[in-house]
Image (cartoon, rainbow, N blue to C red; front, side, top):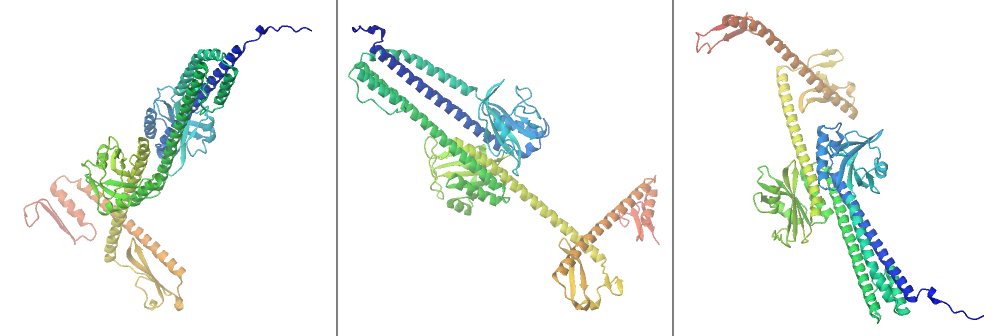
Length: 623
């Protein structure tokens, strides 16, 4: 068989094949990198949105007044309007917040209570409207929710795409009375994702001509350099972005391609490192903020368990130092005239020395604390940068930065929470937001302690007045008439204790509000001994006797006042039947003379008789 000549034109040339291979590899690499960048960017955006919604929902939940929410019964009542106004501020604080609403649950399911909006707004849910299609997270966690919960995915409706977060609403005693829902729009995130994807596609398509040209030029190079470059591409595809081409080919095109590979991998490595660093920084910030919120919540719970003002202040400064790690915390309270802020509690040794010295700050001074009181706003002082402040307090020599927060209640400044750190830039804006929330809770606790103290003082005054009044009344009654009754085997007689009862006698005082008004005395036959049970029984009987006789006294006083008022009414009726002064005076003398134990009645018009005997008079002598 003769060897046939093979027509090689039917096969592609190695140049063509090499060009195709390089083009496909480069295109695949670009597509993979674009996909990685896109999915990383998408994941970062959505994770950021979820963290953002979680923080907003958690902070909004801390601002809810569960006691007011529990009293909402209809749309438009006072508590409804208060909660809606508060939640409307939360909604307006972020333009991407679409809905802020509160919910309850009954036997028929979940229904809306307060929607932070107006009835004319689109998507507004009136009081009592049923939540027909709640999300899976809300449906699953509504009855057991103890913290912030987010829906796993975006959900679409006629108003766009949203992500929902929920947090429970608690009363002051810790009872869960409802759930707060916050919907944030996902349209911005989706738009950024589409824009980023469009850019990647454009970049990818724009790079295709370059890849084709590089493939055609590379086809002219020997197989070995091509294989080497292919191996390099394999390493890059596998994620080794730190790899660099050190053996540069001698051919210009391959050398340029090697340099391009090095540049591209360097850029990708920098981009990925930058993304990882940004994710790490944001994770650190969110972790710190979560810890701060947890610490603030813990301090609020501990403060709520204390009722005495001085104890509350000591607990707050100690916990602020322990939970947040700052080396000094102090609380200033405004004095009664309102011209000084006096240091009442401090956690550091230097602060305690200042309290012993009676440290105070004039409200009109330029001190950080006084400026916070005047402006009703928190203030940060640093010893670095443009806002440099020199801290020269000898009792607190380590201070390098300071934040002062007003203790506000109903727009009134009760005092200032002053926190100092030994780090130059220890306080940032996000730290102040959490600390101000804590300061607001401390202000509420201080105000509650003051109100409780005033109520207890008023109660003690009332009890003292009642005790004095009862003592005076019974002293007068006992002075007018003392009573004693004795029971013997011969019967009951109205006189003092029998003389033969002096031995082995058990005496129990009859007392009323600390005032002894009598005694109960008992003696046993055959001088039998009294035990503790007998004594307790007799003392209880004596106590009940005291209450009973006081009730009888009050009844007698009421009957006497009623009789007096009846007599006055009858006299007034008779006086109204007189038509001249003389007959009126005579009627008054006659009627008053008929009262019991009255010997003589004189009625005068004008001066006393010895001063002006010529004036009109009426006199009647009884008997």
